Image (cartoon, rainbow, N blue to C red):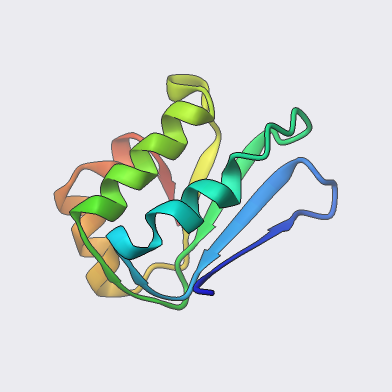
Length: 101
């Protein structure tokens, strides 16, 4: 499966790692990764270090995560992007919605 999750050491951050393509084919797996209903989760990290491709449906999925996590109050960072993925996020103005590292 191209999506893996784990918790941070303090248990309050859910880290979602996406391997390979991040597109519509990963939609359900991505939603399943964060829709635990777990009240202990205070923040999210989307690790794109092994993501090779990102399309508009992936951008939509990131927005759904943001809504799920509390909208403007959400604590979500997108980390370890390659230059192509970072360019897509920049063109889409996602640095205004997410912390991109």
